[in-house]
Image (cartoon, rainbow, N blue to C red; front, side, top):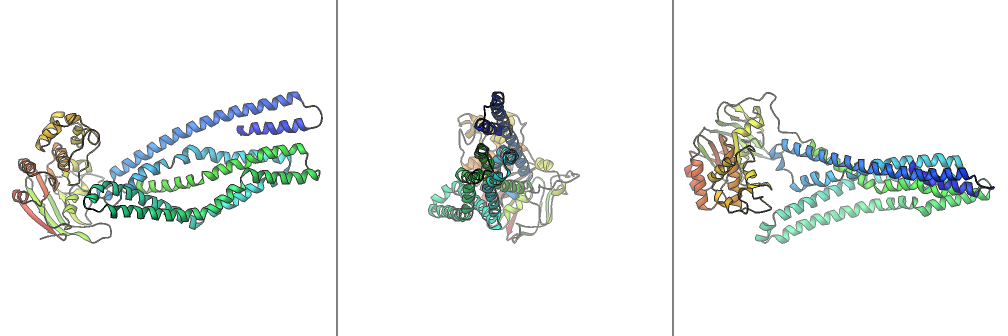
Length: 519
């Protein structure tokens, strides 16, 4: 409202100065001061609104990212394996960023879009109601075109646009992450073609969407453009002035405030796509936030011992075929069990049931005679540690990577675990030893990363240890040293996926899993 004061002041000055007779100086100065005061008030409130909006936007984005992190932290780990990392990265990054215009800008634009025309209408109706209606014609035409942007076909095209963007993001992540392997086996052309196909699909979707909305958007912009508004005002004003129904001085407010009627609506139209994009982004964020967490027991039960038992375990991914079909297996405390079998036989799925990355579709997995679903997750991870072939190291110091499961561990404990994993000497050769930040100051090989992960599991000192070919990238000497280390861990229950004869020979029990069944 204060922003209209300068325009109203100019319009009122024009009417006063163009009226017959000498102007009222006191009235003129009052109008001038009122216009100047309105301008200052508008600047003050605009600054406050922008500042408050951006502060609130920062708080909301921080809250969303924290809630997303908490939700993903509670989600079953197996849930991540069925989703592309690029899509999740987009939700936590681009989609959270997309709420910026909705919070920081939309409130002010929406307020202006309604308040400015309303106040202008009240003033103009007081001058001449007939010319007011004529001035509203371009605005009504633009508003009449808005529903055409919300047709079901346009909504489908917008969702297709978002989906195509998600596929491009996933293709980029997969292409970059796998570029070394792809190039090594001469598949760079095929991988590049997959990315190009995703980009071409996006181009088709985007072109179809733009063709659908361009005519309507152009019509709205034309109707709200200053030349069209001025043409409508001047045409109506000329008719009324020549007929003697309007004083020439009264045309000035319509020339000035006609822009006030259309500018906010035009600005809102420009932000319409941002608002729709924010709405769709919030929908995707809500979908992730709605991810059901790993069920926690209402009254957790403590296991009695460390005996691991699988009874009639069955499991399938989503609606696919069963990967495990009635598996019965017992891991006695203090023994090493080697799990062998062909690829795709269900070995990795079975070992992931022990740390409860998934819950079985049928049967039960027990620890100390207690169903894993009745054990609280904190207690479960105090009893079961796991090292898988696909190792993930954090962008932090080596010491922090090792002490991930035991943040309160002393430096001596970290070094002891590193020695047991036969990675201590390699760490000392890093630029800053145990304080070296991985990913920034140094990069480890696959075998070295596996030994860091093994040290991470050893420092947790859990009675049950699960290894998924955790020394696959180690050289023969290191592999032998690690096997000797594991053999020296008396009292621990160890389940290891094994392919090397040495590992199988050192096990107390060998289990062959094929087609989801123990042979």
